[in-house]
Structure formats: C-alpha cells, structure tokens
Image 1 (cartoon, rainbow, N blue to C red):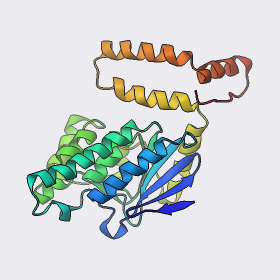
Image 2 (image 1 turned 90 degrees about the horizontal axis):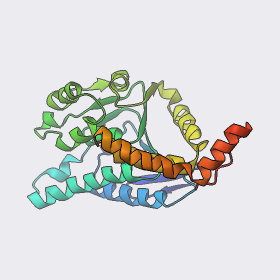
Image 3 (image 1 turned 60 degrees about the vertical axis):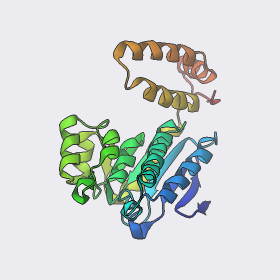
Length: 260
C-alpha cells in the first residue's frame, strides 16, 4: 500500500519500505518541507521491526537535483542556517536509522542530492545516472555535500568534484566508491530487490547493531576502533540470533532469526 504525503510517497514492500521523493517537476529538489517530511517518515519506519530495509528513490526523471535554490534567495542568515541545519538532521537521521538505507539512483543526483546518495548505507545506480557536486557553478560551494562525498571517495577525486562542479557517470561513481554497483536502467528495480532480499535473509539484530557499530568506529583511530568493536562483538555473540546462527551452522540447517 502506498501513502502519498505532501512531498513523498511511502510504500510498504515488506521486508522493505520504498520512500519516493515526489517533486518530479522540480527534479525532486530538497526543499525544507521535503526534508522535514522525510525525517518524520524515517522516524516512523525506523520504529517498525518488520521493516528490514529502506529504499530511497526519486519520482520522474531524476533522483534529486539537490537544494531548492529558490529557498536560498533573499533570506536572512538565520533562515539560511535553518535550511542547512535541516539538511544536516536529515543526513544524520539516514545513518542513525536501524535499518540499512539503499539509494536507488536514476537520472541526476547533484549537490545535496549527491550528498544524500553518499550518505545512504548502500547505493545502486542505473547506467544512465550522473553525479555532481555542482553548487560552485551557481556561486555556492558544496560545503555540506563535500562532507559526505569526501567520506566515500579519495581526496583528489572529491576535490575535483567540488572544485569543478563537473559530472561523473555511473561507472565512474562505482569505480570511485560513491555507489556499490551499476545496472542497466531496466534492471534497476530488480537489482534493488535482490539487495533487499539478501539483507532480509540475515539476522535483523546483527544488521541493526552492525550498522550502528560501523558508524561508531569508522572515524576512530585503529586502537580505539578495536577496543570499541571487541566489546561490541563480545556482546553480539551472546545475542539470541548469534547463538541461533552458530548453532544452525554447526547443525547444517537454516537459522530461524528472532531479531534479538
């Protein structure tokens, strides 16, 4: 069942939920209203234990063209801050979600739209997808998109993207690490579903705790990361799902996950 909101369409496709950015005439520009609605939608889906993955996609011809520039004209400094602080909250929410969040990318993903792809845990792109941090071409440097993009790809590549504003194609995005894989446009939905099914076959507890742990350790130095993750894996080994999974492996049977 699909529910149309002001700026989104939310559809149950259990074990996943598909959330569609629904401003096709504006190439799904991330207005403040859309970003707030998306934060609220993610909050609702994050609380549902039956939802094992979230798919973010765009309606019409594009994934997202980034911020709605009309919102940035003639505003006060506090109003500008509110737009970008809302975007910051959205990006933090995506990575704080208990479920893996998958970007399904077609058309263009530019500026904050590229930032959203980089922020998602996983991303699958159609062969015709293109990516850019193109704000500099409009005189507004992609400061905040740079945060996410530079954590996905190397420094020289990130600097090329933000300093020139030029596009990269889907294959380049995959080579650079911005997306996981590229498929023909007519296989995009099938490829996303295959990834959802792969995730859904795994322990929900391990997925949720593992995603949280990844972001906790990834920016720490190696010694601190090992200390944190040694405790995490020790606790995980005592969970019902881990005990069931190890028993199933030894007994040569399929595990029955309890999600705990």
